[in-house]
Length: 143
Figure 1 (tube, one colour):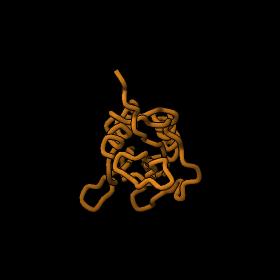
Figure 2: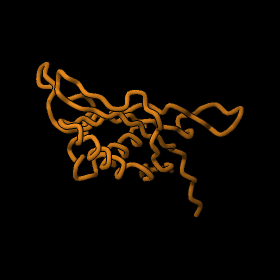
Figure 3: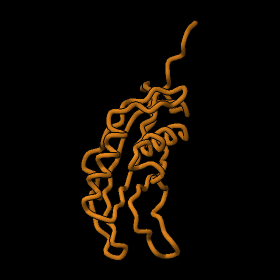
């Protein structure tokens, strides 16, 4: 579970625009939200476990589906598109490298509830995106 998150976060931060700009929480100085361009992304446990058998019980190494939410925060409305393009380039269609696991290509979850928004107090724009992939046990190699 931690390996999938580490791989996702590393991939997300691998673009020149997003490098060093991925955080687990909204950035604040005291009670004031920091006015800057960055991404908020937090780890989650798998939202689905599937052992592939009708009567099989779930196990920690079962096939796992992950859905990670990403919030892009920018100081200008136009920045949302620039940052979203960078996030899409880094994630969509890429298979994460997780030791002992085989991941499906990362896909965008359609129709995320929040979408775009503007916060008048902090004078910041935001866009919510969700990405999903499966992490499956890698087949054991035979000598």
